[in-house]
Image (cartoon, rainbow, N blue to C red; front, side):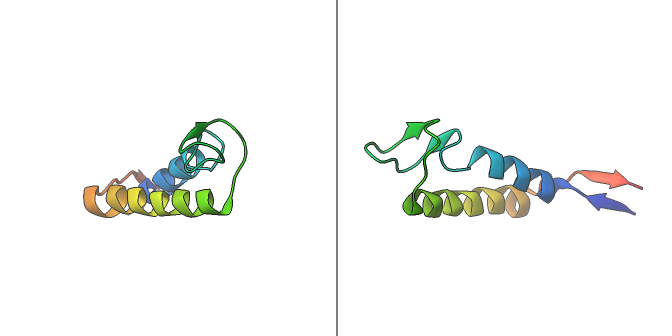
Amino acid sequence: MGTDWGPVVVGVVLFIILSPGLLIQIPARTRVVEFGNMYTSGISVLVHALLFFCIYTILVIAIGVHIHVKS
């Protein structure tokens, strides 16, 4: 029997990509989208959390990303 690392890998990658202000911030202070500004706000955290949940659910449940490691 092996371990399924697919949901863990998807979660870590999405967390890094969707961290507000790291690569992209939606909504930004003065614009709708800003890239690499390293700032964050409560609304952008909420938007990024909703995006994370939606994309994670689609990838893990609907598509079924699996990475099996045999021990």
